[in-house]
Image (cartoon, rainbow, N blue to C red; front, side, top):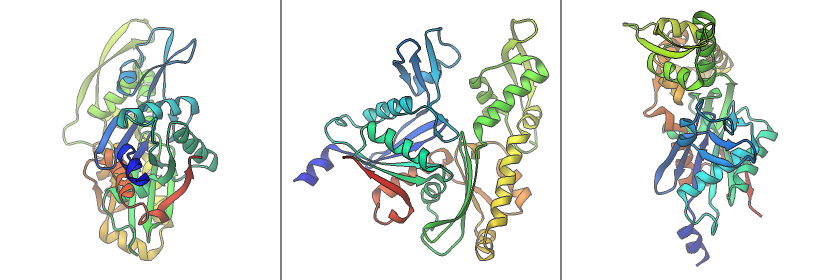
Length: 345
């Protein structure tokens, strides 16, 4: 009877707690939340005004008494209090009876996370209402989400490019053989675009505009037909609004440094891979996941630099959270791949 009671009220939850977006998978229901990891708060009493999409709409548009905060940075918690608030609100969205029966939660985290950062993630989830908390490395979750044979003695290489971190891992026999984690990803590309426009056009734009530019005309490899778009911002000299036209070749040059850092990390990971597993990777290719995998030409750039087949998974942005969902369905099977668990007292 106790099992039935818990099963009826509580839903196991998988969370991809990302720097840019938080995705939540509920067992039996699939992905139910895909919202930006942003919180809007009042300055005087630090009260949460909005989270997710609503808070993102406020970016760069808030009055003096409200500020928008991104509580995650480089894939880990930068603001403990507001990460906890954000998680609590997301959990309430997906589970109406969260105050009666607390869910079991699996959270994907960067593989290069420190013990202190692990504790911060687990404590935030537990305070937000979790009964049990499990952590899983993002590359492993991505490999499981991409249906790779991670339990077999076969080399599987995964590149997971998110908002705050890029991780390149070789997985075999339910474990990570080697992993290269760099805190360079989508956010750094956005910052590079902001810096480029400031330096070359004396134009100041916000993070949302920079992200829009990256998504619309950004590329990592020369395009057959270069793209153009209008960009609006503030003229740093005259101090008035201004519109300019930029093209994809300029933005590609602007993002050259962070993209090169990711390419170098892939090469480093390949150098560290044992020869038997290297042969598997040569035959099977490399899988790309995460929002960064959607950048035009990045797969082609990596293919050219590594001379290996590069394949982008279907719906790369949800690959990691789908992996946590598969783990939820068979926790015992994947228990070796979980970092640690904490039981709610």
